[in-house]
Length: 477
Image (cartoon, rainbow, N blue to C red):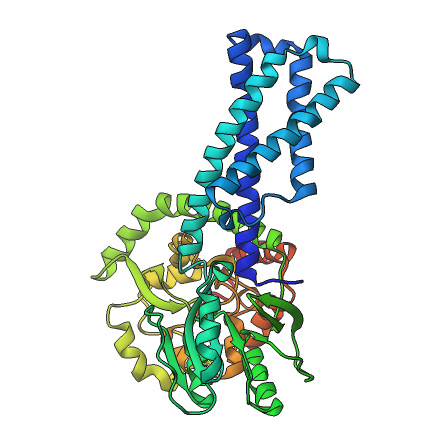
């Protein structure tokens, strides 16, 4: 059964943190046990028996970890349950090590005191580290940035009941940002005071879904007819928003379909795309590595770029603009300033010369760009500060172009699909000759193609192509 991307990330993080904490505990406990038994542990490395048992203990634990899967849902376990979990783990580990030592006839070379010190120490250290992991995961799940932003559509009789489910611990990964009813009637008073948006009427639901930060929709059709439900699911699918429908729906809607469980409800879910959590973590690690390298390059070039910008025009070195990120999230994008200070005001007067068909602005020999700015743009140096956005997690190395707020608010339904992933410093349309593209629909098509075909290998390919494009100074206008 497939689960939401946000939940997959949390579960993967939970698995990694618990595994790492337990392995650290085993290593520390084993070294402490040897220190207590033999004093200085420098000589321990020369005793191949203790090295062998130590390595085998780690391998046994990793095998048992993935075999039993006892570490999942750690946040749902209380303190007493955690003690029982750690105790069971140590008991199984002790028996497994004892069997290994017995089978390979190592007992006469292995101190029983080391056994005792090791298990006793591991009980204490493992439990304390588990508590630390709990706090990290609680902080992670409390963060609004990590929650799955959800809209609930239901009739009045079911709305409060469903909201109560989403406020429970079992659905802690979700944050209800909006509730709506198809029929324009009053929505029952909510006990939740978290600023949930109340929407009446189908047209307003779709209009708001298009502009607010929204990852998924939970649809309880109630008395709505199947045609209305199919239309709604189709519209959300067109926007690239995951829609969970609790009843069977026979409809030729494109997308990845899966059955999922939400509290007491079973839903048929429609997704625009599905990615492996391991691939997503690999992408984030690549972003962090690339972001750090990019920031080092930015800091090295900063004095020279700052001096050049200041020597030609008054104003700040950096340009900050509100942009739209993944699924409608707002963030501030940073660049080196390449235009005069009145650029935004002058843009209105230049709209008649816009060479781009659609919701983007592009103009050859834009008079708002300074001479230094033209050089920065031709070499793509103006985009170096975006590595800070990448480290923050607002952007990725490779993704789609982040639109401005006014562009985003004009989007049609299918345009929003390109916002289903994080925006990128570069992307498929940027390496496809962006100066030659004059139709926004072509940009949308390339972004959609990238999302549907995404892989780590594709990201690496686009990054290499980007380097080639920058050095050839092609498509940088």
